[in-house]
Length: 326
Image 1: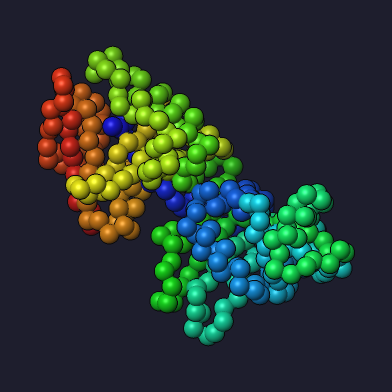
Image 2: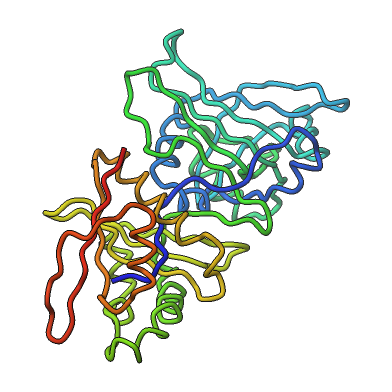
């Protein structure tokens, strides 16, 4: 298990700014990419947006807002809207791009909860995309309608006691050069395996064997466990595997690329794992490491982990440590 660097999933670094310059600095991504990063929040949002009408806000010339009822379509990993070619909101999207989209609520109590996204809209000319969107629509789009794809820079939700909300209620797309965290997907498996190999290989000579994480099948691990990755500009820098056992909430494996050691990522990932445990209702987390991985033992001790057991293996012992959470 381990390398002195562990993580959880969830909220992305990056913040929404008020100026066009700060908006332009923020990356926008497809609905499918958002759903990969935050599947629970995306599922909640799809449910809310699937009950029309929703309300689209665009930016007029001069900066004033414009709001229209719309019927969003989620298909082929994209968020679409059809509209008349003369629609003022379509003109806003073509000229300035930025939008906000909010689901409708049926009453003053906000029953069912609220979901909000913001980002940038793009006209779609491809016939194949139009066919997919038209087939998924709850109505028959007229031939003259123009299709737009809405890409996302932020999503969030809220509720008022009548609905179960996602664990992570807000997501922000990462700015270029910033680090973000997301749930791992199957296509990440070879990149995760490569990172784990780089992180653990320096220990092979010291401990005299191949660490277990270097032999794992990461397609299977991602399929059967909670795995999250830390990435920057599309490159995975860290990974963590979390699970629940008879002993509690386990930080099962964590690795940080050697080039990112000393940057605080290890501690940040541990803190995220601890926050995830609290959200899941646990009052402690535990982990284990090889007795010769002394750097890990020192780090864990510094941040509040206490040894509670040493379990002999064939020719070494695993050190088990637990941290009580506030």
